[in-house]
Image 1: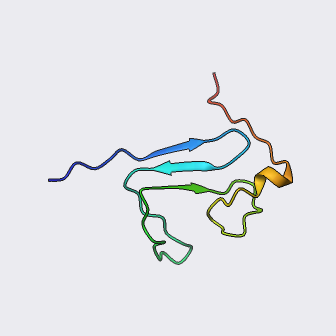
Image 2 (image 1 turned 45 degrees about the vertical axis):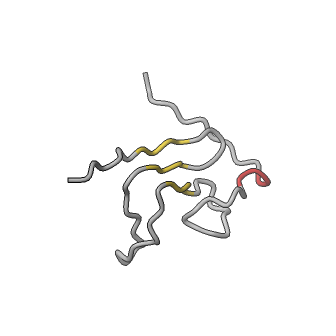
Amino acid sequence: MAEEKKVTLKINDNGSIRVTGDVELLDGEGKPFPKKPAFSLCMCGQSKSLPFCDGSHKSYGYQNKIRVPE
């Protein structure tokens, strides 16, 4: 049996959510997007490639700094 890579989602400061590992991303109808080993999801809503990040947050001044509550 092939070992699957752990799926990780990292919330980047002032940017996207970076997804790595063997994960399947589905649209609202349950259809899969083409599979990639890693991709970034948009958090600012300004991407022209939703749900993927295209770097638009940089020109819109989007800011976030999400941390685990202590």
